[in-house]
Structures are given as structure tokens and as C-alpha cells.
Length: 372
Image 1 (tube, rainbow, N blue to C red):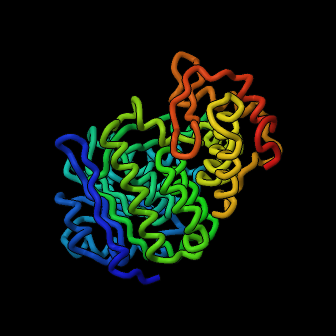
Image 2 (image 1 turned 45 degrees about the vertical axis):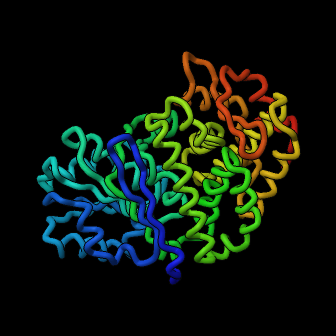
């Protein structure tokens, strides 16, 4: 999939005196000078998975080795179920075998799971070393690679152990989307639509209008979607790096979604699909509580369906079990349920002390959009 010059974008995440670039465009994994410049030290550990490595690992290894770096690679099995403390420990052991010093660089070549694991290892190795995000999925390009959230899962819940550790650069080679499975492409589009849903009604309408082009991987539309999503996230992260306020809005649909993923043992819906269902549930809850019109929840569900995404809970999940998972969410304070709801498209807000009975009713399919 070749992209025209209009598909090249460069943004910056600004965090006070600190900043790092986001490069978006075709052929970037073949830019040896760009890649090598991210690792000023001697040691480079590349982390990838078995789906991505056969396509791109040799190219990235060659870029760093050609610049005189001492390179090692770890290829993990794919899937959210691999985002564990055990795999995190394997990365630390690989760094030790490499003899990685404090000027080492970890390189995350893959999707969100690889980025989270590599970033968390970078945050902890010798109390923090550089890492670079090379996202190869749409979801990672528009969400997880930007903002410095790193974590692993526990059986009790998702992303419960982690650290804020910003990358030194994000390099999104849009050519990698050519090998992305259709299901993963659609999962990424859920996070794209999320930015419109939480704070930009005009962008929401743009995604609605471009749904067919995005699913068809039309190069200019995809590049614009990635750039606009990254710009939204970069602006929010710049204002609230450690998620004490506004950044929580980026979790629209995620409290429900993470509960679904955990209750399915991280082997059912993929992250973007779970977030899609979660956003519909959040919209239904918002309507039930009188915050937003039912019509906006219906419009959200229709937009997600046009993007090839589910909008209803998978069968076999007990509402009480999902609620128990939601009680472990990181946004909660002193045992009180705190959710991201909305007043309609483009108007998300943090809802404090949400009543569990209302959440259970929505999880049970009662209220607007029941059976959607």
C-alpha cells in the first residue's frame, strides 16, 4: 500500500520542557537514519511478536546494526494474554544478557501489547531508559503508542501494574497497515471514532462520512485519521500527562471494555471491539441518567457498526461479574465507581460516584439501545 506525499505527517507531544516527535507516513521502517537517530547509546533491544516479526523485524534490526549498534531481539507470542509479569521479566532478562547500560534503547515493533511490555521494561530497567514506539497496528498508531502509558495485566484485571514512561519518538509506518488483518483494522477504527465521541463532533461526523474509505484502507483517509487522532491525544496528554483530570476522558468506553476483556480471559473480543461495546454501554448509561439524548447513543452504535464493530455484549457474561471487574478500574477512588460518560457526541465528562444499580441495569440490557 503506497501512500502519496499528502500522507506524510509530523506532530509533537509537548510536556513542558520535554517533547517528542510522532512521524506518520509510508516507508518509515526503511529510513535507517531516522531509526538509528533514536538510539544514541550502544545497546538496542527490539521487542516484537510472531505476527509482526516475519514482515518487519529484519529490516529494523538491519537499520540499527548498520549504525553500529549492538542489537538483540525478543519475539513474543501474539495476543493480550501475553501481557504478563512473566513476559515483562523475560524482557528484563534479555536486557541483562545484552549488558544494556543506562543509555540503552528499547524498540517496540508491533501493536499495543508489545508497546506496553517494552515501555514498562524501559521504565524499570535501571530506573528508566529510552524507548521508541514503532506501531504496526492502527490501534497502536492512534492510541497506545502515544502518551507514555505502559503496563501489564493481572488475572484480576487489565493494566493494573505499570508506569507512566514517555517514548523518545513514535514512528508510524503506514505501509504496515497493508498486512493488518481486517478485524484488527476495524478494532483500531473504534479508537479513531472515540476521539470524535469524546470531544470533537465534527471529527465524529468526518469518520462517519469516511467509514467505507477507512475500511477500504484508502491511503489519504487513513493517514488523516491517524494524524487527527494523534493530534487529539497529544493535546490532551500535554495538558494532563499522568491522568489526574482531562486525560481520563480518553477512557470513554474503556471501563466497560476492560471488564469485558478480563472476564473473557483476554481471549474473546480484542481491545478495540471491547471499547466499541463499552462506548455504547456508556452512552446508554448516560441516556438512562438523563445526561444525553437516546438518539446520540443510537447514532454512535450505527457509526460503530458501519466501521465493522460489535455494539452488544457477547453472550455468557454475567452483569454482576462485569461490575466486579469494573470496581478494580484505576479511575475509581475510595471504592466509588467513576466512569466516563457523555452529554452527547463530542461532550464526554467524568462522572463521579456512579450508582452501581444503574450500571447493572445497562449491563443487563435494560434502557436505551437494548438488544442493539
